[in-house]
Image 1 (spheres, protein in one colour):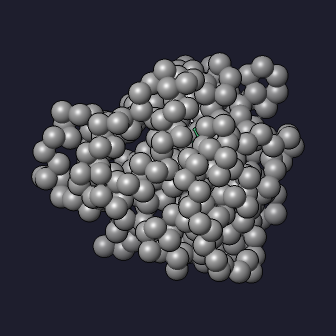
Image 2 (cartoon, rainbow, N blue to C red; image 1 turned 90 degrees about the horizontal axis):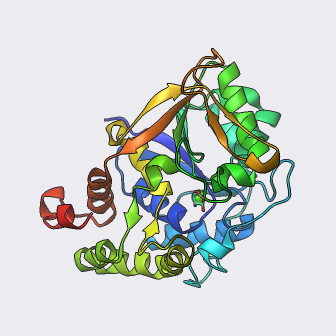
Image 3 (spheres, rainbow, N blue to C red; image 1 turned 180 degrees about the vertical axis):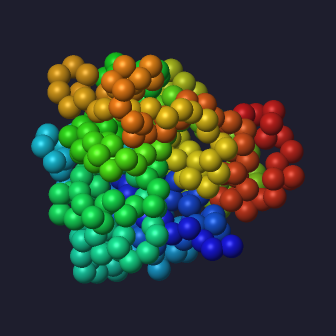
Length: 324
Ligand code: BDR
Ligand code: CA
């Protein structure tokens, strides 16, 4: 089977790190590069964190490129309150040396997308993609499949009553990406809060991970502790919502989520800044520029995640069904 080539554009970030781990452990895809955008963490910190995850996974062969350090128009607001002062849950893992930057993220994207059939899984604000549109729209339009963790349809926001962080952080970038896809007659796969809120890593699930694979389980425990505390404080949840790995799981297996095609516009101003306005009833009579995911199968997600990341056969996950 030919591996599908993928670039992961991300802002690691706790859940971004889990998503990278899942991608690296999935033989159906080849991660040809990781591009970093400012989001959860400032871009230099995100770059360091990506290398820490690659080190943990023994994959320092994968190139990592630094991208935008601020949104295209607005002031940058990080999410270190959610992801910890080091952006990786106060794990304070040592920096990993190496990695010379021969080019920035937009240059890498522009260069690489024209060479092959490559998809993008975007797990952070879409600033790098907006910059690519500005400098090389032709390359942007060559993206094979664009899966974006961001937005929400009916679920409430996590940064405002209506806005999800990735699109709220750089609404102008998200709006430009959706507009450009619309103009080209293409579709984004929108893995928004409606589905990612179904993916809660609970203490029991985490404990099970540690029992099955102590090394990986302990790494996940280390980077998620702060995230657990944040969720308890702000959302009164025992556990944490791990958004980004679902985008990777969906990329691997489309049947893990279900949804509908719709025209989507991202609001860039005022109290609903960053909101995804989903024209589910087709008021605008515009062609769908998005597949909006609304349902997911939590058990199947964890089966996929556990079997890949912990390297355990699905048949051996005997108690998973009782704890998800
Ligand atoms: C998104 O924002 C970030 O905090 C997470 O990494 C995820 O990509 C969820 O709103
Ligand atoms: Ca992210």
